[in-house]
Image (cartoon, rainbow, N blue to C red; front, side, top):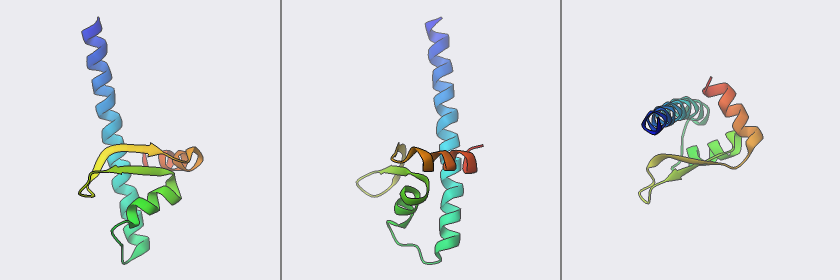
Length: 84
């Protein structure tokens, strides 16, 4: 049974990750549409300010699949708007 549960958990993690990337893509489109002239830190700042998400970036400033929720109320808006 343990193998089944771990496969199930891995599948759920993949689904959650895919939903996050999809939501992030939609939020980025919103940012670029509103911004016009984006700056390098703009998306990071926009997500933090509007949706309570702090993306984890690599040292080369590439977006990873990891993030922190810094404002739960704003994050709820992100979930409802982009991940449903």
